[in-house]
Image 1 (cartoon, rainbow, N blue to C red):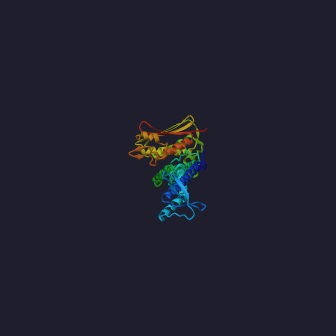
Image 2: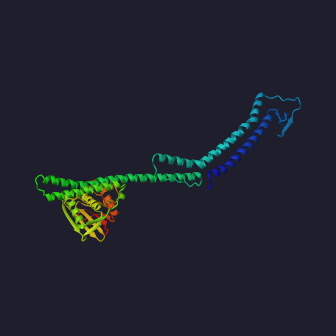
Image 3: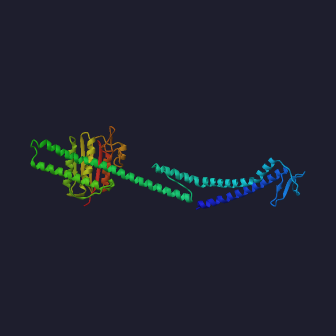
Length: 396
């Protein structure tokens, strides 16, 4: 690796050669000019010992030096003597100027060839970073100290870029989590409102028996418990991917019964065909997550169903599968490719309206929950409309 110091030592000898060569040329040139001017205008000169002499050219152009005898003087024009003085002392000024010019020239060449590009690149990179623009790359093929500095700067930029991406992802995850929280809270609240409407409609007329009233209150208590558990879980989570299933033993009859209750309360006037196909007495699943996914899929399908919904709950080998199909026209090809695979994607479009009206977060969250539970989410078109199948792994 050639360092900047050794690069400087390469330019330094060149500067010395130019300086000394130019100084020698200036000295020789001014001396010759001085002799020529002295010979032309008979201007006497003085040796270091104080002896006077003058210079002249003979007829053949040969230069001669002749010392003046004692008391012999040469008369000359005062202006010629002034010009001669300037010529005699010109090298005193020209040589330092030449040396300084050589140093300046080498400094400019050294800066432009060795320093200018990396410094400009670092300055541009600094300005981009100050403008919070980190989507660039600082490359350098240099192997000196400036090359190492640029590599260190690029490492810093990458670290800042990764930190910004991480921060952005954390904020995006928090936004998704809040949206999912608001989305999934709506279904239990709708169920509770349905119970309240039912009680308001039949209690004043005394049409609700004590046993039925206690049953409805118990169901409402169960929904409230779900809301409390879900709220506590969301408070503990920092990201959507932090969802952790809490599997416990649930009877098949109990799970199907709760799904039927949700269908009865949410379907309204729609025709609901529900099939439960399973021979197991009990399952090991996270009942809360299963019901959240089921109610999410059911709510989304209800928005686009025309007259009928088909719900299937079945156990296949080591998986619990829940499918919800509507007769609302199905998904577009683009929606099938993107639905549930990326947040913010339009899960379904009909008349320019996205399914769920929650930026496609419903299916995205459902897919993450299913994967966390050892299953998957399949989005497809059925015979009449869209079909979404959620699967969950079972532990015995």
